[in-house]
Amino acid sequence: MKETFKLTAIVNKKEESYESLCLELDVTSRGETIEEAVTNLKEAVELYIENENIALPIKRPFMTTFEVMAQSRKTKKQRKESQ
Image 1 (cartoon, rainbow, N blue to C red):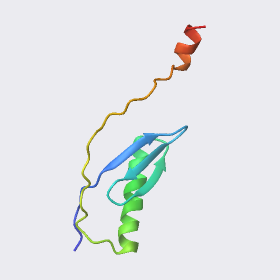
Image 2: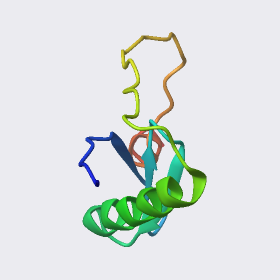
Image 3: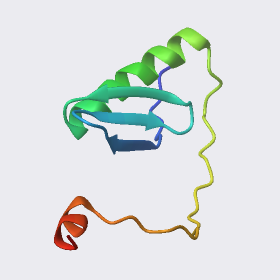
Image 4: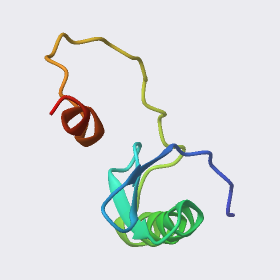
């Protein structure tokens, strides 16, 4: 019997495409748009679950935020304006 499971996708903009990552399974995919990247990720995850005999339900990761101290860099616009 097939069930539906909610998984987490993170999408990052790359140079000319979007990269998507399923946090729970560490599966990635790409697409030209955010929607395409998520659709491709869904297909990749479905194939991964079928082929790797993954135990379901999949545990959701604990997500949090944190801060770091770092030197800010000027943007191209800021560098140009300061010249």
